[in-house]
Image (tube, rainbow, N blue to C red):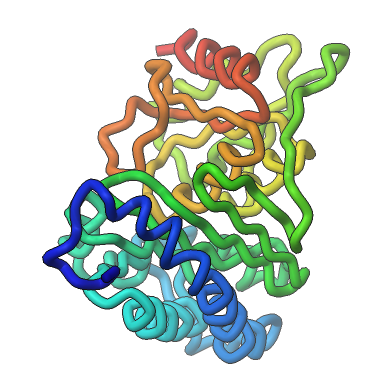
Length: 290
């Protein structure tokens, strides 16, 4: 029985995909939509000054919508899969030790209640809610919901990626145009990270600053964006999107040429791209400037 800690072992991944997800994917979707309906959308373009705070600095914002949506999702997701852990961005900010559950033996829900908080605060529709289910560092399923656009993308490992029920296929870039690559926003990069990303400023590549990471991954999975190049590894920003891109046919690689690991310890920056050739090219470019 899933949720009985005594049965957790090598067969759990199959049990989660073969038993839990077929029964409860709709429940997760309902929870994500409900969190947006009750806590996020009522505050969209209606945030009061006291509902917005800074965390590490003026570019690292948190709102009441972030906190309350994460609290709601933590309760619902934990109840759906007894014994699972929930690693949410705001909970980790309050207690960094919470992050360690990603590498533990229990299944873990990885939650970003409002990915693109700056866009949300500015009244821009380019934000989303991200939920991923992982076990021992392997992402098994993901939900990417853009509530202001009412778009829901889902992925299950080995079963494909979908947007509003339609299969996603990332395809390959056209050979006669520059690669469009969304990169870490300059406001969120150190001097060393900026130098590493300079390799993308070359012929045949058109880099631009990214918006919501979750929506950039969705754009790659849809074949609307060729690749990303990100210099941070917080799992709540990447877990859902990495699986979405994989299941749409894309590939992710770190600067050292290895797949990105949600458990951390990656050689940064890393890329997620529409196809293997694009991923290899971007990863190689990221190694050209030290």
